[in-house]
Amino acid sequence: MAETYASSSEAAGSKNANATDDRLRLLIERIERLEEEKKGIADDIRDVYMEAKAVGYDPKIMRQIVRLRKMKPDDRSEQDMLLETYKTALGMA
View 1 (cartoon, rainbow, N blue to C red):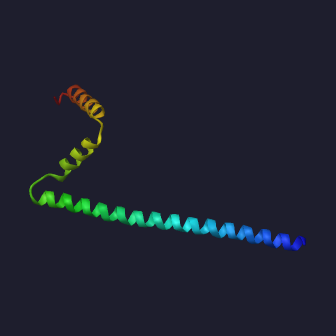
View 2 (cartoon, rainbow, N blue to C red):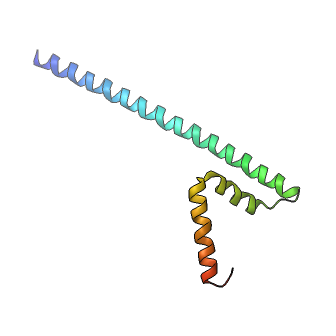
View 3 (cartoon, rainbow, N blue to C red):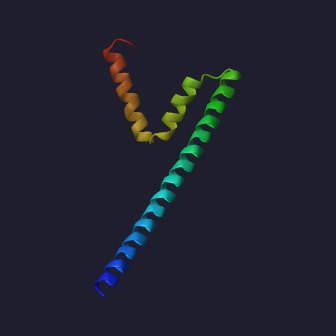
């Protein structure tokens, strides 16, 4: 009877390991799909910047605008004040 118990215990452990392995595999596959989607989106964004450049816009400035628009207004104001302070200190204002 002890052997039967050990065998069923090992089988249960094996099932748990398989379930864990399957879960891990599924999670990794999801990450891989999302990484692929992210690459596709990054390519689309690059294409938009190329299109903007083709019609005369400066992609570098557009990237700065996108970054600024992501910021909270208070954070953006603080950054602007610091930039002006540094420019003044360096005689650039």
